Image (cartoon, rainbow, N blue to C red; front, side, top):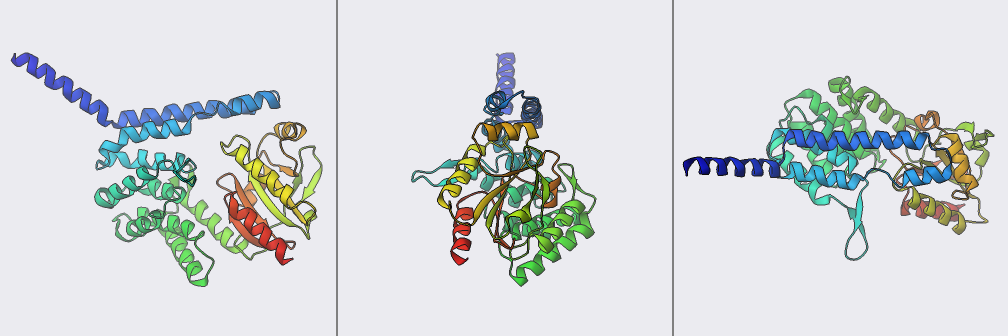
Length: 358
């Protein structure tokens, strides 16, 4: 009987442990998804034609499923230190995942998970030396609670390097707040701290120094009210193109690539805007990261009708410091920036307002 009870106890303990999740399980979820995603990208790159590419694109690894698996692993253990890094990974990959609420409004698919992670960090991990990846993941989380948490980390974490990464994340979030002088001064203060304290720290293969440098470039050249830099390159057929060729027109400058999961929505929105503003001084100008032949096939198939720079090497994308896709700029006839951010309803509203003011 005693042996049986011991065996039963061990079995129950094993089941609880499996249900609760372990660092090994979290690492397995991440590795499997990243391996599948890498293989999918390679298949896209060697697709022989538009039909094959479209078929492969539809087989994109299920990010939502991977995010849910990771959440199931870490949720029961959020008070434990090992969950900080997989939580950062979860926030990063799920940033663009949305669902509709009961009245049709879009909301983050894992909004409850994001709040639970923030609460756990504030309660258990504010002093952790492993918060740097999570700080940067909070930038992508589209969560109004991200900024207050980052401010607490920047002020209270005992590790100066973590403070510096939090300062960089704060500067990046403030970019979406406003371009008022007071906000701009705070952004510069945070960027200065990030460079001083954490310049050599790498997040997802990019140093804090490089990210801070990009943010300073954005402040100087790509903020609202600035004249957007000109772009010079080639289209899908190798023909020369310049952004300045569209002088006098309101331009939606759209950085995009077909391998993104939201491509269908983006192209539909672009076509709707072109139809709405037909006959007006308006154009959508794409900067596309697909292989040139893939862009050519998309145009030949009638899936996109607007002009596109072909930028498979990312040279033009780098000139605008683009780190996430799709990204849109609304420019007036003199290339003055009126909006930059996700390709959503604000793009169309801003373009309409600028056209009305012409």
